[in-house]
Image (cartoon, rainbow, N blue to C red; front, side):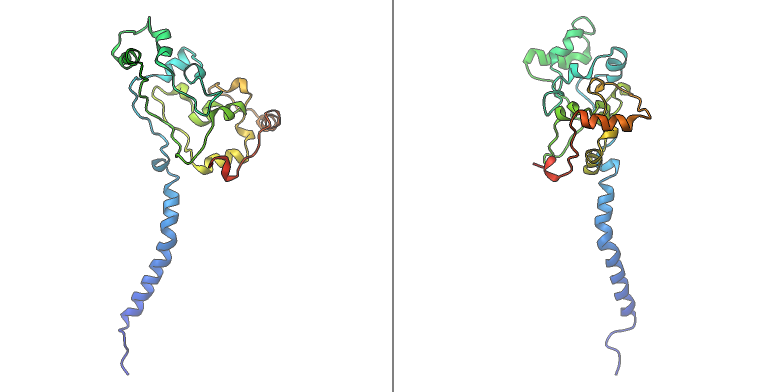
Length: 216
């Protein structure tokens, strides 16, 4: 009796089965890997701003504290952006008529805030509170990087779920005394492990890794 299917169909079926065995797990694995790349996380993202505010100049040269512009970081869920009046405290005398400050002058004239472009953004389903992190000893540069070296702010942290959970599971290495929160380039000494453990106790830091910590 002749064969119902030609011999090449055996090879074809094997090829299809092997391809499915590779593709089915390969696609989700590839997507998960891509989500951790800078292209997906936005690491290195640096949007232009309506006012070319130079952090390197203001933080390093003029030594302006982070909280002068981001005044609500210690008491609110959001760090906040500076009101235009904060700029004019200095710029009434310096560059007050410059083209670069035109959006600030317009903001004051219309009583509407400058439309700054967000650099760090979390999904809407993620809850984050600035004040609790600051109160527990998480420094600004931990999440925002060395802004004192940035003429234009760049997103440095991946802000992935794994990145957050790693810190929540073992917060000690990232903690510092609260009076050093805004210090840039803080040296991490050999005693950081002991210091971190002590700060965990002092600030009553909990290792929160349950889903409802961030997804409410």
